[in-house]
Image (cartoon, rainbow, N blue to C red):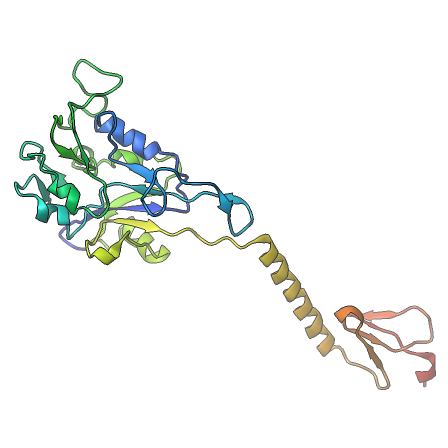
Length: 285
């Protein structure tokens, strides 16, 4: 087990239903102002909030695809390199953190981020409903003012206490798993290994700490039926090949079905396996 943690998130796209519960719970927990989101559920490409019209899935049923997005907490974070004041920095546990007191609102980090997951406070953040202490959710979360950039922090106020990020704890489909990516025995590492977890836009070389588990392919009803038919035909042919055929027997195969006939004394056919053997009177000894 590694001595240095690298905290990360695994999202199971087979379980995710695109309900936005992660986004709403995150917004509430972190006191995010109106108009801004730290978590979003977008189209698979990440370019639009509308998922589009349903399409036919492998089983013929309507299907809509989406993908949750937030800060990827990249190991090789371009936002950290672009920030001129050190307001964005990497913690020893791998979390890309924010020091709002150092942010000068230049938005260089936003320009450097290839995932478009940072937001800027153009005005004083407004929350609805409002409370006397100006906090909707966790009072330990620092306040943000006008003119600063903010983003997902993996809920450090919770994770530093050993708790789960609120998006993980609140997911109704249990599609999110949080843990140490450097520990091969952790649940996140096992899921990535067993299910082939992938990062988004890994071609940028940012080494994200958020992994997506691909959907399991569903076999269509037509494919299942064809598979069963092929299996039955193969079984019938195998049985026919193993059935002993008496001499002077006629082989009849109507409608692609193997039938071995040889007329017996009685008019009733006798059955062996899946083949019908009828012995003709002229062939009787």
